[in-house]
Length: 138
Image 1 (tube, rainbow, N blue to C red):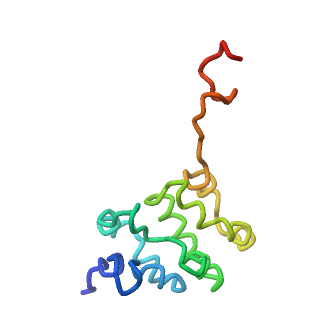
Image 2: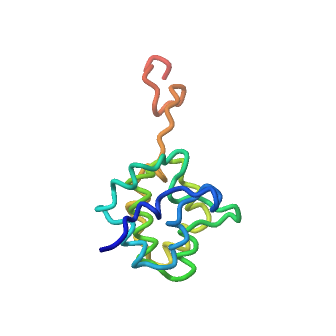
């Protein structure tokens, strides 16, 4: 009998208000086990706005960077799937600012990421010709 994975998603003050998931980025099997759909109940218990599972560390890196540096392509793919499904917001685009080209070179499947809300954001500004609803101004 395996222990509950909630301990890995819990936010710890000792870790600087972080969960333990990013520390396992170098191990594809552990990360795949934690991020599998059967654990979705534990994902929902986190407040993603306040304590997201994937974020930038104080040194400017992220779990994605750690996995990519260790050539853990499966881990990177699992993290991207998770981010697209649970943290799908332009607020997390900074996670890919410095590593997107390297991920493409490493043949990580970034197509879902490019089609997600993480890297696509529609600005609503009525004064722009392309999105204006007032055709009389045109």
